[in-house]
Image (cartoon, rainbow, N blue to C red; front, side, top):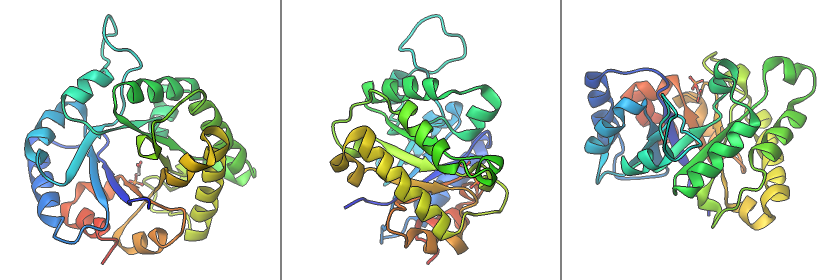
Length: 251
Ligand code: PGA
């Protein structure tokens, strides 16, 4: 009932030329058999290019962040409405790099999540513990807090309105992946917390992606776990042939 989603997070990478090559490669790598819905989160300046190359294809696109504000004197910000007008389906919210380097707080995540929903953009709310939090046995309390505060007062029309990405910070860009059992344990816990925050019917239908060094050789075993509904892929999403393998769960 939950259609898997594989989303590429390009981070601050790409040129006009490389984006063209990458998007054409992803389109041709989609193939006929579609096991997962596919999306890319592009740097803002490449979103119009994504729109023109992906329009009418099976690949969706989105931003890597968005403003809480609709318009006005907010230098440097991009509003949810602007993303919507550029055809975005998704926006990442609260990626750990934004939390770590740009002071994104759970309150900011909450306001961005609501702002996205108001503009009918699906927020991909990113959560996850750092290595020291895991070692201190705080993984579940961190996830609980990020969900409780991040989703406080959020109301959804249906489970398709929200995506959550569990990205253990120690697994991002490090080549260290959570084992499938570690990931499943966290995903099951997240789903329980979503049930407390939003009700069990919605929680049962919300997609929870795993992110952190997802590669063609580990995607299959992760995707086989009952509460893992897709992947948020960083580094490996920049190479079309590798991303294509991940879209097909490494097959
Ligand atoms: P990675 O990044 O796949 O390069 O570990 C994942 C992410 O940051 O979303």
